Length: 360
Image 1: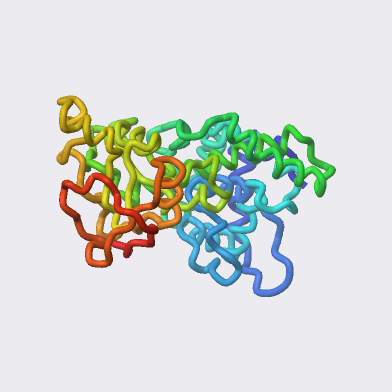
Image 2 (image 1 turned 90 degrees about the vertical axis):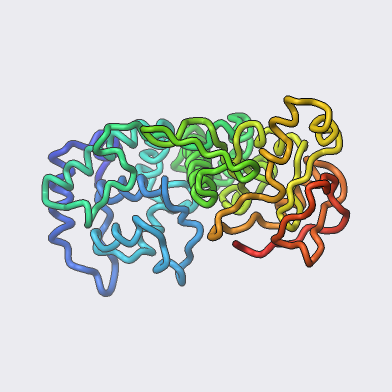
């Protein structure tokens, strides 16, 4: 059985041998599948940076997004097997092998470690004839040598993450006496940060990398400008359930100014996606040039600027934000104005309850 070093310090020769064994593998039509080789396990771990396996169950595994289907075909395994391995590695399931959990905790704690291993196994795959169609460079690290960086980490406070995983860690240790507390907590903290990475990237993609409040989208010659946009939770991470933390419909893409204003309750959004200002900020806009430059209309839109295909924020998150951040009775757009822009003068929200707006 492979040990810890066989994963975290895998050699090119070992990786090539394992890929060759996979290429000669016959599909398993019945009975127990062959054990995962280290290159398969490591590739599944890398795929967890893109795919939230919790979105799929036994009856929906066939709908899993890339690269899961491609990996399944390459490994001669069903999607459900790939997803189950991902669950074993990030702490979602407690029946993973001890050495694999230790490997995941080690590699996820510092993403650069996984990036280095990923390059080794991808290069080895190319050496034995596995091309980009059968195993794409889904993390985009092979060509330019870029580091594997996690998105959205500035929105997570270390103390909040550590506090959130403590209870889960205690439960883990009750059922897994073979694991130590440090390894378990490292894995769960790392898994939370990878989950935030997936959340942030999905929110940014949903909103076409544009501030939903003002439309800001800065592109440079080498790509998008760094740190000009933030993908934040509507209902904060610390107050959300594990599922809510990963729900892209609990997120908004915003420029730093409008992100802070929303997070601190200077702005809110009603059930018709209408943007409202706190009365004190609305007064400042009328009297202060600088405030008007940031919160006048324009640049601030009347309603959230969502692409036609983007799912709308869930009403329950907008309600939570209005009650606990903005303060006051949740606003509601009249039936005739849901999904449409209201007059610009309506800066104070009307009372009522927020309901889910139609998806775009």
